Every structure is written in structure tokens, then in C-alpha cells.
Amino acid sequence: MKTFIPFLLSIICIVLVMLEGSVANILIHLPFIPDDWQVTSHFLLLFTLYITIFFDQRNTYYGFAFAVLFGLIIDILYTPVIGIYLFVYGVVLYVARNLMKWLHANFFVTVLIVAIGVIIADIATYFLYGMIQFHHMNWNTYFVERLVPTFIWNILLSIVFYPFIKKNLRKWERIKFLNKD
Image 1 (cartoon, rainbow, N blue to C red):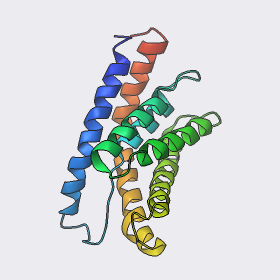
Image 2 (tube, rainbow, N blue to C red; image 1 turned 180 degrees about the vertical axis):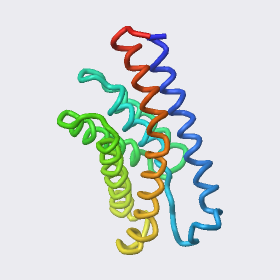
Image 3 (cartoon, helix red, strand yellow; image 1 turned 60 degrees about the horizontal axis):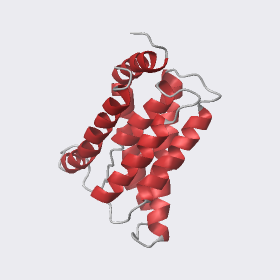
């Protein structure tokens, strides 16, 4: 089981990458979401942040490695520019990892780290696409129609799945690193 855990985490990451594309199409057609909102699900980012907070040790980088690898896969599958999510998710996980050196892993810290991560990821993506002139959305429109709905959606997901993900990642951490079942 000890050597199987990284493969299990990567299978979960693959499923989350597939869900990101599927859920995006469903969210567009929900009646309570305004037509001008662009909600982006960052399932992979949330899960890799949880890996960094609850699974990684001081000398392991599973969360960062999964964020970079599967960020590249998101780029290949869903975006016209290769490397945006690879870079952005890598930066977010680097920031989260450094913040976790000073903070204790609890509910409020986790929500704070997720909030910071989602905001950094979405704003960095906006600016990177703007630098290569891929979109022409002004800041006010972006803030109201994309950043706020994306932030709310991902924070809600983070809060809803927190108990389940934390419990399993802590269990897998004990099995992988502390040799306890």
C-alpha cells in the first residue's frame, strides 16, 4: 500500500482533470448562474493544495509535482497556449508550501490557503493571457464576471470536500511516511 499511494493520488488527479472540462459545460447551463458569469473550476488546484497541506512532508513535493505535471495536461487538453497552467499552478503550490512552513494545518488555514491559491491562479492566468494578447477583457469585467464567481465556487467546493479529503490524505500520510495503518 505504501508504494501505491502516489499512484492513487495521480489517478485522482487524472479524474479531476477530466471533471474540470465536464463541470465547466454543466455550470454554464445552470439557471441560477447569470449568463455573463464565467465560472472556472480549479479541482486539480484544490486537490494539490490539499496534498501540500495534509500529505506532504518537509522533504517531499508530491503536491508541487502533481500540480506541474497535471497543469501541463490541462494546458494540452483545454487551453490553446501550452504552459500557462503549468506555470501558474507551480507558482501557487510554491507559495502555499512556503506559507505552510509557518502555519498549522486546520480548517481556517486551509480555506485561507485555498482562497489565496485560487485568487493567485486566476489573476495570474488573466494577466498571462493578456500579455500574449489572447483575450481583450478589461479588469472590471474580469473581476465581476469571472474572478468573483470562480472564487466563490472554488471556496464552496473546498469547504464541502474538506472533511473527506483531509481524512483520507492524513490516513495516506500515516501509511506512506509513518508506516502506520
